[in-house]
Image 1 (cartoon, rainbow, N blue to C red):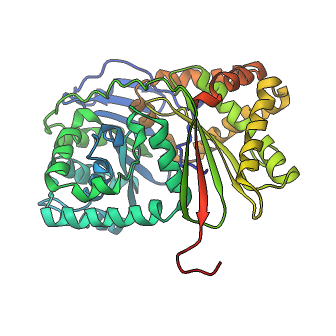
Image 2: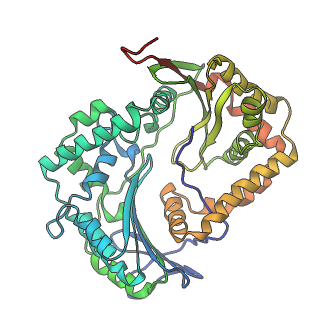
Length: 450
């Protein structure tokens, strides 16, 4: 199962903690090209200067992902992302993107479980447009009831196309819902269809007023920029926006799981599919580093164990994958998944997945395998340094995750992972009683020929 996780580079970006003041031109946190300031209303601003960058980047992140929703109100965070483009008294519907486009820039946004962010790429001398527009819609968003309901219908159609019409996505949603009993990760970012149907303008307005406040946001500007002048502009446009209530992420513990959970999804599909999800820690637990290396050993390209065993040698699977991300606010899941080849049993495929896990439990992987996985992790992060947008994203993401200092330990920790560590975390976390399994059972379309 291919999951869209943000990659992270931690080697070449340095964020140093320190007090922030708001005296004019006093940018208090810096090392090389990176600056930080916290406005009196709690807005955190980072500036990353790169004299060689042809474009500039503006990103604003809100601690307002799907984890901030409630049971019965799922999908609010994503719907509000759509509504943020519906205009203000000064800039009408769709004017935001038109203004950015006319200035030669591009803009977009995204919502995930932990946060939502909006971003633009522009010429450095046009970055003031982002500041004007984002400050305006932080406090002046128009949320017309008819427009809200119309956009809700758009999101419902998006859900039908991307989730309900995709059998493997349905399996993923069902596995998440079954694996978690208390964690807000148990519902999908886009929301359940039943909840979307009932969302009102008042629901989205309350979410907007609570979470879209300066003390719940982070701004990152990057490029060949005049940091002092842009900071003056940010203070001018954002500084007068009132501080909102302090947002504290729910303190939630997941109840212990006492046995495998298994479910079946019967949908129109060509091939059977299996998704196995194990409870796993996030980046605040050091075992997460060894789990990342374990994922690389099992599924890090065509020379990895899963590919060689299920696809090359046994020839029972069309695809076989392992995925895991520690970069989440709450403990999540370590995934194994595979699609059976035509005529092959999904039971046989599932058994083969477990056999590869058991091999590592019985005997640690070779040092060469582990080193290759560590090299792939590091190389993937370092290649991201070519993108100014990516560098800016890293700063904001770790700030959103709550502890920037963790990045300093990341590569050091990855490099210290041993084959014995990989074996230990496989034995600790990839156990049957902590597993949730979803099986896609293909069914014929009604009225189709047998």
